[in-house]
Image (cartoon, rainbow, N blue to C red; front, side):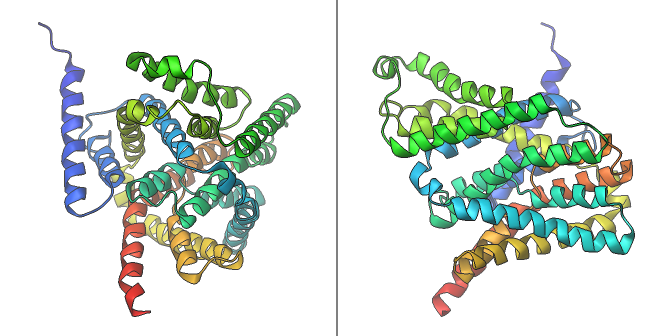
Length: 388
């Protein structure tokens, strides 16, 4: 029998993921840390077992969609709606503060306004995938701090739309009125659907009882619900992950869908792992070594600045000092959607190729190190709690 050479690469990659996952669990770190490290090791800048970053990135997008789908099932729509103040005001203040900090740096370095706004947007977004996956692992997603953070993350996903429009204008492009209208209609429909689920907390899905008796059809039904609404929001020019989250809220409010978790959990684990591995593939070891000091300096500055900004916002909006610091650290990393903003900025010539490579390195490393930083903060707070 002919052995496909790719099989050796897949087996090798799987073993690396297994080994790194085992090592991080020994160190009592979340699985996401192992997936990111595995991506660095097996990527084109490591062992070279996997080269097709585009394919893995596309597969990884399914992981984010499934992750948000599960998160939606675990969130109370009414509790989420009650957090509109911290979602809207917190996100708005955080984005403005991030742009303001970059503005001060840009003025000193004589950067053009377009570059300042781009980099301000890039550092303002946190990682929905990293944060939700971490909160699920430590079972804090349904706590007050978990739901506050989730509300901010969802607001940031929505904020991507005006960010892309602004960057298009700064890059010399014209605003497509048709796309803007479509996105507005989609946003109104999504908000209306979320409001409906919040009012009618218990709903019935068509053929729910019939599907409940067929285990094979349950898998495809669950995928249809998750990916169907994700596709619809994508067609409206919105985030597919946002659509999957709303689909999860619908499923969570339905009476006949208790089997969804059991049927889709293995798929979620695999695709989420693929997503984080695809992020690890972006880390160029040679570039990182060559520009180590500048990348690490920027990384530390991003962590400190984002943590301080977010902690201050949570404190101003009424959270305790302890929770505010914890929330600030949780949101300190730069999100995966920032890769999109950086790529748009590079294509529009708002940043150079060197600036783009530095941005990718800082974003990827922030995602890689964020779970460890959150874990350390959580442990320190737990040790200090009895003494207070």
